[in-house]
Image (cartoon, rainbow, N blue to C red; front, side, top):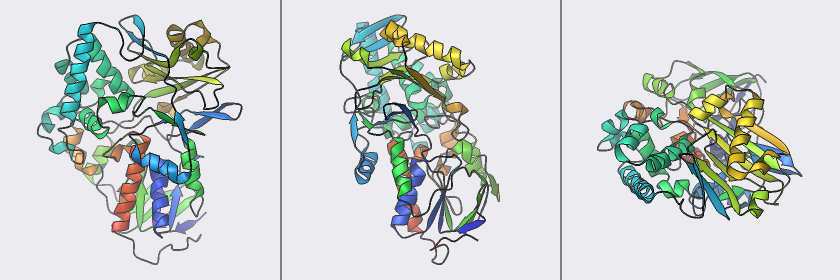
Length: 461
């Protein structure tokens, strides 16, 4: 393609990059988007399950607590439907599997301790400034201990500790010992507390997108004036205070400014000329992605509903941490989604596809009975093995990173502005956080609007 000139180069065609590109084009700037994958969507990915129906192998949940993505869905004319939440849920702890409607009927002491632990977590989280977590009153102490240490120090019972560990794995797809207590509290504050983040009804898992969440990015990209450069990983980025040249496998893009809308683990692989400032470079080396394998079991019908089950299970044993009923809005085929997270995902990723599937199906059978074995089809994605993500659901910060390198997270470097869900101050790691980061970066760029003349009408050279 040679070289193309524009005013803003967007690197990454996930949700945050496409939101930024749409905003900037709407303000009159010329924008070009370049993407390493052969598709748009980033960590949003649909898969067909028969009968013209799709479910998500990537991010899938939105809720009434997600105001930005809800507004975007309205603008795009995309509808949502409720996550199936009727019937009894399942909870497995210490070898005991119980059915419940609101609260698992376990030991009274354990339930009371779990409730106290959640209140302590929320109270401590509210003390962390969202824009500048490193300035919290006890930031250094919290950043020097792991989330696991905080849980052990704060929670007494097995059930209380198990509840918070499952919450951490479900939030970061990482073990509590992998991230700092400060990072946990920052993200809990950013999500409004434990229950909005963990709940289905009135919470972050309440709704799903008709047509699959990846349709959001498909529609966003279709509204851009120029097609996204797909299959074009950026290998080198030459930058200054007022220009960038992104050299990809398909050619070069030159602009005044750039939106860096890709995970830190991937951004660290680009050859920067000149080298990035030390704090930004060191930060990107310390933001690992989580480990998660998402599996989709497809059945003729959602038979568990007739048995009075919601399809939702949570377990602190075995490979599968959580399951959801992901049946499409048409009601068929029946779909159960299983999440394998953190250390469990690392272990299963070493198995063959056959052995991994057998392990996960065994968990589904333990939860829902022998009919769970009768799958029509099976889909899975190990996001840690996905070349252009390097993990999901997002990045987490290990001990010491917030207080040493936190100020570099959102600070522009020369002409480069940093997007991505992990940079959001509300709902990081969620689709809502991705939308928020795209909007923030677009506002930053419009605040330092590029000089006129370069790339008003993009041309190949």
